[in-house]
Image (cartoon, rainbow, N blue to C red):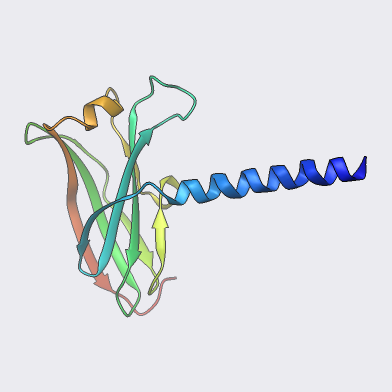
Length: 139
């Protein structure tokens, strides 16, 4: 009985580790501006709802030799026209530090935009604001 429980617990741990590893993959390189590596991926805003809006997840890595304060906003464009602009955010990153997703303020979606829409040629996203300022340290 104990052996069965150990196998069951090991299977759960392995499953969780593989889910975490999967969450790290799937990002596409976007740009490397001001020594900030930018990667992104699109996914559904709600994993369990196939009809949910598309969500843009961004991963930012500070490749500078010092801490930086990043000020940014994101825009979605259809046929070259800005149809969505996020609020302007600030994010402080230590040398070599990466941040990604919603908890870091790096997840964006627009009501009515689905995954099929973001794959069309007439849809693009870009930074509307992207400023990097060197700082002594992050607070």
